[in-house]
Length: 96
Image (cartoon, rainbow, N blue to C red; front, side, top):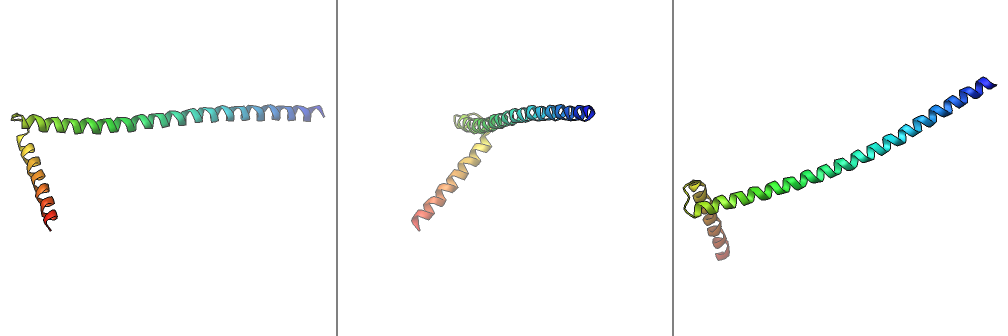
């Protein structure tokens, strides 16, 4: 009988250790998921910042060309022409 009791005790110890390890792994997994969410939010915020800075850069480049800079004159002329076409299109729609 004592042999069976030792086997049962050994099994209980092993099951207890496995359950404890499972709980530790669940906690580690939860922590990693939280870190992942935090990192994804940070990445999304940085992407939005990048888009914002790119828009500001384009606006400054456009303004710089309008002030008389020779850099990017061709791009500025193309943008002005595109704006004029859009205005003409709007006027045509309003007059219909």
